[in-house]
Length: 405
Ligand code: CTP
View (cartoon, rainbow, N blue to C red):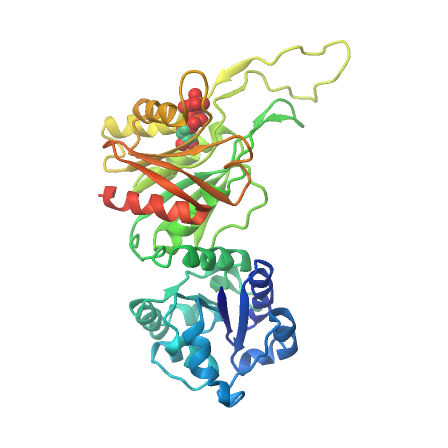
């Protein structure tokens, strides 16, 4: 695919280099178009070497090729990172005073802005209006991350990490309409990752959940405008998604407490976490040793079912109006195939939607792609096509939308 990476003049321009590299490494043809001020931060030679294509800022280079029209027309995706307040202002008002803004005017493909600026600039009414205009024009403007900005200050306005921009850009290539702002004003709780149940100070019982699917759910929901709390168990070192509140937990018990606390007042809870059903009945205070007192078995105690607890609380009139989504990782066995088990689980758990993944043979766990089925309590069944975990998340959120009060 032909990707244009537009680079605005902000300190985060250096992160555009990793983004360009991710696109070229995944086989895309990348044209980098910096603004004149972006070149104050990163040299033209760096972008040329990383993209393998010439780099210009103005419309008067290669004039016979008519680049100010052609690059935009031929692009499959335009990503602006960092999108500064000034660049978004120029884009929102339809200016074409350099090659990048001219390209934005001629592009008919998905356009993704990844903003980066100081909090004051991000929260200024002028920027808020420009972001609204760009969205109304059909562009996707990401929520920035919160955290350390240039200098010592922190707050919303930090450029989302290149991995995250890449994930959302890839999502728009898979599905251009994956990121509508349909969840604005909604509060969604997502659990992700596996829990760890300690045996002694150094050992635990765990599972193979990487957290990637739950993180993708949280990320896509936040970029569709929801206020998201992510209750994260053990994950494989994933970057926290931009504009998402992350609460870290270890055990199933801690996860249950955190989900209960944050689901009060929420519109939906999505239980993507792989919660341990059992925990060691006794946790040794000191490391279990070989020798005289070797244990030959582990006694287990059942953990409470967090999802079933939410459904029960809703039945009891607490959490009324809460939409509840469960996940099921299933393998077929002699009692039935994946879907048979999943239908039974949906009925047993009483949630509104159940996302079903077939696992085993390297599927679902730890990998970047996923597929499965989405079962609704109303009897609807939808196959979820193979694609990124963000794509699957976008389909689940499509189905969740109509269930929100
Ligand atoms: N779940 C939960 N609390 C638990 C176990 C599971 O909230 N103690 C949630 C998971 O987050 C997931 C759903 O329940 O959304 C299904 O999890 P799964 O482990 O497949 O279900 P189980 O009821 O444990 O069924 P199984 O007997 O197949 O393990």
